[in-house]
Length: 420
Ligand code: UD1
Image 1 (cartoon, protein in one colour):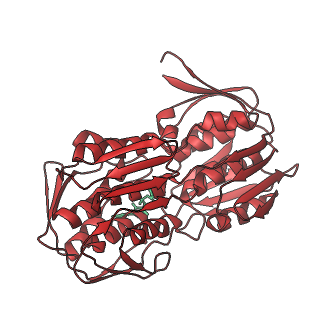
Image 2: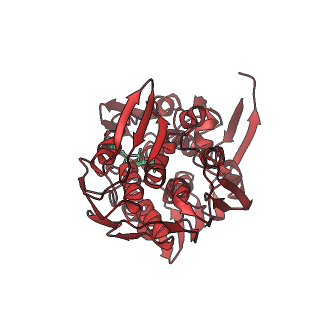
């Protein structure tokens, strides 16, 4: 079993480049299945989820591979299957993104039901309702979902909650539908805008991406294009928090500060000195950091994906912070592990009260989800002594070579194997 062994207490110093965003790259790769011709996607992070998505594309009959560092080429002209392989679907929730594109281009798709998830139920009812409203028939049987439609027809869709995944899936389905589709209460995350830009460069007609109301005029086909994925705002935030918690001073390149406004605001409030210049953010931590309250919200609010890593900073802050998780119902799985490291945190449903302590200590801890795992890395960098972090398969899903990046900033992190 792979583990990180982290010896905490070293201030991070230096400069690193932030990779492209996983949450933008995955739906864009799914969207390539609608394109006849070659698409080139640059700054794709080399992550387990991305490799699973490329394997799915190949199993459907597309050519899809990394041709050089960060650059993926896909040719989906000759796709021969619309059945997303069950074992790959189980490996990655994001394979649900293939529903919209395959249904739109081929009039049918079969996916298996994505399982539950440790951060909450994560249903796909908005996706299915939207597909039905676009004219698809849906059969759910034996754990499979089969959707088919002679033609999808544009209509007005209203989401109960601005779900990122549902907005992306429905936007992709609508791109090749007949006529106009309106998505009301659409998610406004930067990854939505990036997907829309990619689709536009392939010939799609999408307006209003990044706003509450999106309008999509269906076209007959999409053709090959090149696209560069936006920087990963969650990786950037995690690295800034790692610098902050170690009282370090770090410069990040390839960031989009506008995607991080709520996060940078909370970091400043807690005492982090930040300098922002175009696509560069430099940070330096003052001696003592203060408690701040965090409420997660859809973009442009504070992102749920940084709630856990921020909590590791709050655990060591002066005073008491109150966290309120408004996006997922069960996203505090990291708390027990932080408490094992000496944090003082109590949870009541969606609220966590974090009473800052003066130090945490290394322990053997286990990540149970991606961002919870990142929180444990942040905590380990500040803790006294050695932390052994297990469950790296979760962290590998979203952070490209995190151990190497942190080592470049001077952290004492090694990836090694231990027997169970
Ligand atoms: C995406 C991100 C994830 C992030 C989340 C919220 C990707 C690959 N993942 O996940 O990192 O934490 O957005 O910013 O981009 N919901 C329903 N029914 C649905 C769909 C969603 O009830 O059909 C609920 C969910 O249970 C959740 C909320 O809506 O409580 C938000 O989920 P959603 O925005 O869809 O998250 P994902 O797209 O799964």
